Image (cartoon, rainbow, N blue to C red; front, side):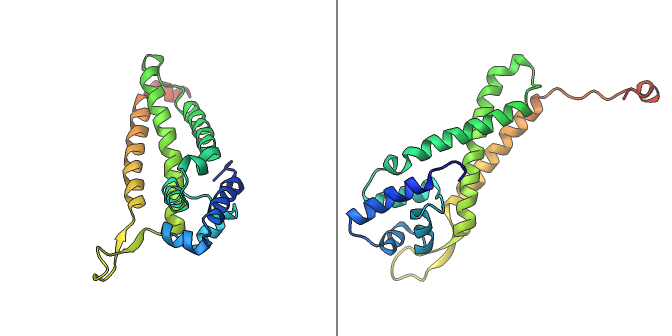
Length: 184
């Protein structure tokens, strides 16, 4: 994740893990992630999704806020950068729609950051997981909940982007005379 102090998050995880006298494998297994992935997070080489950090914080017996302290600032900074980018793209929207546009742009920026983080998690951990309702059942592949989140957020993001695009002034088509005179 761009701008995140992954080493700080990892060092906080390691501190809590050692306090609880747990191994990386213990925390990884109880968090539902691979030990290799957990190790890369703890060593500051990977930045997990909020969902993964939440699972890790529960296993480590600490608050999500404890692990996220810098991550929240990072996410807000990323949202601000995305908001600025979108404002440049949609700066031609008429001023009478400004209140609506500001809210849509902020929401689109937040969704874009969440989508990026979800996508990284999906790439790292796959779309499907083994799941069973009870110990006596055979495990089967099911779509991971984060994939459903990604799909729903993407639909909302696409709808917002369409709303914003629809608010842009329509380009006027040059008439035949203008084309002939080289003005269009």
